Length: 606
Image (cartoon, rainbow, N blue to C red; front, side, top):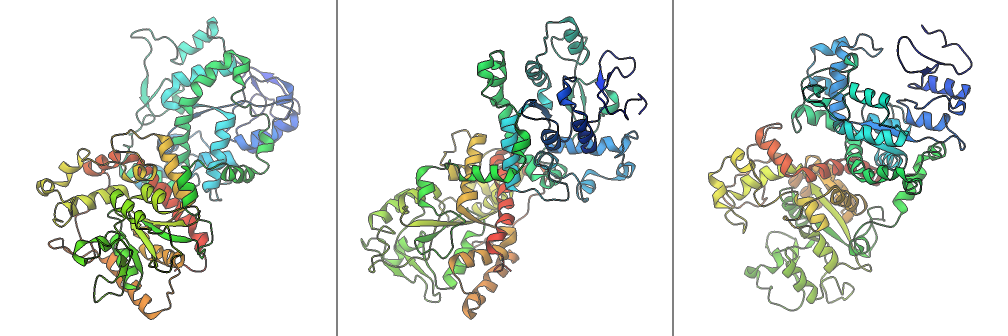
């Protein structure tokens, strides 16, 4: 208002005070201002070089049209870093409408646990949802596709390269004297020794910004710390979107450099039809889901989609046994119910059926109604031998034993060798935080002398010593899902493929939601929970999984035991988190899937 143009019905270009740049009499940072600018014909007036906004969905829908298309550029920052910066900034920014002096006396953990109106800020803004509405995987797909097609992305911790790309897109001639002066003033371009240097602000990130009012130094939150995890867990969709943006930043370099050639510049679509895109963003998500599958051919064909009816008779349940995630307890639960399982037990020489060429189901324990088939599907060799015997191949042959479920750690090999498009696998699995899984494995294998993977050397190690470096295994889940050895480097594309396999093929369970997970698995397997024997088994085994009070002195029935827990944020925790980072990201995604899959079991879960 102080400039006197805020009530005008026409576009006015003016210089606000003693500066060498012009502005326009609109406010495009907020929705009412965007609607006013649209009514005044801001874009159609061709008076602006660049429009700034925090409302991309609203601006895209209302400011632009077919004759006046937009080209979006944006600078992104790690969601945790952005949130922490906002926390400290709004404690002191008295000039801001959102000034929060009450935050001064809070710790970051306390603040992170408050109801936060800006969870998953980026995804909300991109898809046009209010902060009272929850964003989900479909919204994330829309946000990713929007950023991929419409945005030139920059990164705050790659500021100089980002500005270089923005200059190319905006047509800035960096050879001009004024451009060079501006670049120098804000710390970009060639640096003169002892003249311009980056300063650490906003939590340790390098910044050349000279706007001291809007830049604040504050303590940095360390990655993997409890504070970091608390904020990250409140922004799961933004975390996933940011990982995608990092990859996009690398991929866009060649595209942006090609802008010197108009023909090559067409590789990145302009955002001209953004208003049409936002009319129904769900259509884009649905179309993406219906696109040609990115999964390996055999995996896609041999495993049933998670959305297919559970009562389909052309499938055999396939439990992917992720070690130290409650899998042994789950198998014993279904033996208690009288199920017939195929794992490694049936080929144990002590039962005397391993050398037979035919297939047979038998009860390995007198006091247990459960049965096993005389195959070993826990190894490649065992899987091949099972296939030679005709296991699952001739599932309709009445002479072959009925199998209720298969349990193995060998996801890829079993999927390709044992199942077919005509007789598919129905996947389900129990999952646990990768750091907790690793710690459980350490304490178990330092005492479990009956295991072939028992490691005597670990017995004399402390947890901190063992966790200080990789011990022959990292990111086990991602590697098993996509079939990459421990020696091969993983990429973000590998993680995305693992996520897609989980999303499309798996009914997921969580160890810390064991009872609910069992209910879902029971529905998938057709278990009658009203049956007295089944109900007794459920109560016995779910209660045991909660207790964790069994010693590791001798081999126990449950393969479950108590051990010291690792403290989140400790040196051991941070090291194991870093060693298994791709698995940690996958686990976060799995947790999201667990809650999203609730809709599949509505009316049957506890």
